[in-house]
Image (cartoon, rainbow over all chains, first blue to last red; front, side, top):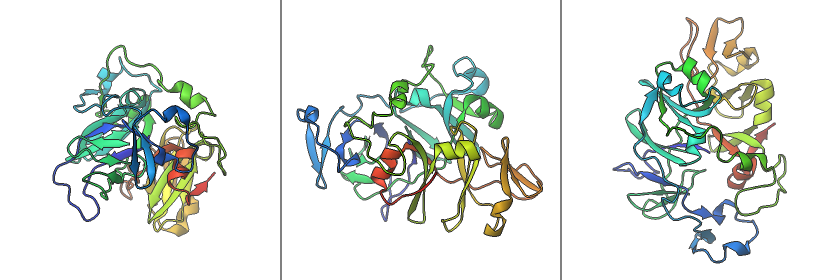
Length: 122
Length: 204
C-alpha cells in the first residue's frame, strides 16, 4: 500500500541502490500482540528482535517488476480503464503512473525518479 | 516485508526501516506520490508515462474480495477490536516532525479538504468525492489564512481566487505563487497503520 523511495539511511550512505523484491515474508511483527495461529506452526519461523517472523512465501514468489516499461497516455487507453486507480510519482521531467490493479499482482516496482532509484510498493 | 536483492536485508513496508540484515538501522525515505485515476492522469499529465501491462490485463483489483470483506484483517485472523475506527477502514497517513496523523478516507471524500495544523508546517490534504484520489501538500500560506482555503472541483483556491492550484498535482494555476510542495502520504487500512503507529493522531 504505501509508496517508498530509496535514499541514504540514518548516518549510513547507501553506495548502491538496493533492488527490492517484495512481500515475500509476512511477519507477526505486524501484529505483535495478535493471537498465535496454529495453521502457521508448520512454516519456517525466525526470531527478529523478540518477535516471531513466519515465512509464508519464499522471496520472489510474487514476482516484482524489476525493469518497468512505460507507455504513453494514448497507448494506455487500450489497456487502462478510465477509473483505474493509479499511484503517480512525478518529478521535473514528468510523471510515472502505476496501476494498482497491476501492482497488486506484483507488489513491487523498481523505478527511477529525479535520477534516484525508488521502489513503489502496494 | 521487503527484501533487497543485494544484501538480503529485510525492510518494513510500512515504516521503511530495515529491521534485519546488513542494512539494519537504515531507513528508506518516503517519496511523495499521489493516488488518482487513469482519466485524471491523462488530464493532469498528458505527457506522462504509465507502466505497461500484459494484455488482457486485470480489469479489476485481484484483491477485490479482500477489500470487500470487512472482517478480514491481514492473513493472521486478527479480531477487529480496534478503537476509533474499524480495522478495515481506509486512512491516509502522514508522518512529519516525529508525529503521525491519519485522515479517514470517508472524511476526505466528504470534505475534499483537510488541513493538518499540528505539524510545524501545516499539511493540506485534498481528495475527490470518492476519497480515492488523494494528495497532500505543505500549506502554501501562513496559518492565519487557513480558513481562506477551499477545494472547488479539481482546484484548490485561496481567498477570492488570486492564487489557485490543481488540487491533485499541486501545480500553480495562477500568476501569483508557485507550485505546492508535495508531502508523502500513505494509503493504508486503519488496523495496519495503528499497529505500527499506536500513538497516531486521527482525523475523522
